[in-house]
Image 1 (cartoon, helix red, strand yellow):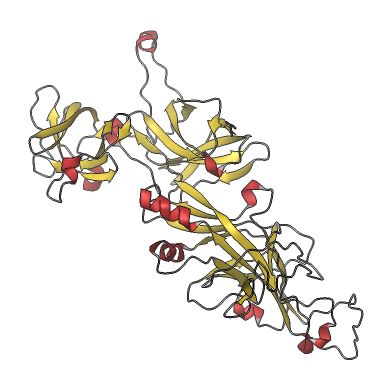
Image 2 (image 1 turned 90 degrees about the vertical axis):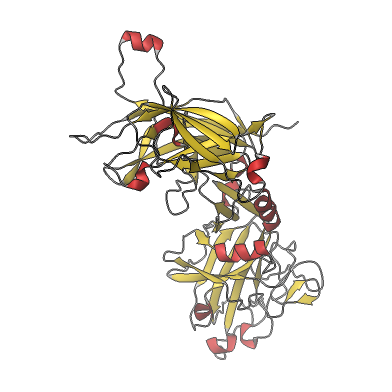
Length: 495
């Protein structure tokens, strides 16, 4: 699952020279504010002097007399909303957090082969309303609302000019071409914001100190700010976690010597709904000794199966509010079973299972699939979470007429599948496949097939989006994107 948190404020601060004589080295734009600009930028320029300076004298000019001109980015995210989501269980502990910023193309000289440092800020600051990012840097905020190179708010100064101090929490982003976006894992820092060990004052972004100190120029790297009209170019703090549910009720396999012991385990889920809402079972939560249990019985004879753990039951656990799971293994030739969930003498639920047997093959299966969405909607409301169910069957499924008339084919289940979302008008991928360590776009599955939950607050309303699906191929050891594409339109109704 992915959830994005917006920027609450951002600004560019600088100590660049104004139109005064650079060689004098006395007039810098340290009071300039760019809090309302739609661009954020950082640069390091050495010995800069231009012939547009009216008093420029090449006979007396030297780079050393001018020194370095620096520009840095400060930015803060809505961590309060993240903390609220963590407390409610919407975002689980163990999630990863990424800083994402998007390159802004400009006509300025582009730096190459450099590193940007992202550092935790330790002091509160104000954004301000300045727009002037170029000479003469006229939007000054001395003693009024806003931050700049010297002041962090009004007449309150930074402890160190330029805002950024060495807090020990520094993350580096490499930029070989200068056109890169930033996608930086800052999980340790965010976890400290969440725990309260560090106050969330945001981060500062600059060229690495070694580059800032060099007698050389690296010019200007620009990003879009939170004020840009481009919805998907605004900076975000992105939470990622594997929210997939892997309920094996629909593909339950009996124990086999063909696979390792771990692969003989099947995970079953119990969903406790009351009046349309998931509710915890009070007795299970009473204390640590009250663990929910699962026993399996032969559906024909009603006798208990022999379980692989040589006990009469498996112990289950709480997944989230009202949801419990247990991993079970059974050694039987029977093709059906009952699963009974209980605590002491209280039986909570009895389910049914169609069991399958593993078998080896004398050929490599190159099956292709037909995909569709079984719960299609004409539109999806903005800023809500919608469940989308994927139906799949084999492409060459060809039953006889009797079976066609009387049988609905069972949905295939893919244990490893992922989705991505792109905007149809320009093919821009706005939620990429998350098949790496976080598995953030992995599809869940249950007895009805695969599904995933889509948070449409991440999508710009009143646009059409396409959803692609990629399925893991065990023969090629890679994910293969399927030809099927599902279109959705996200709408924002004004009530």
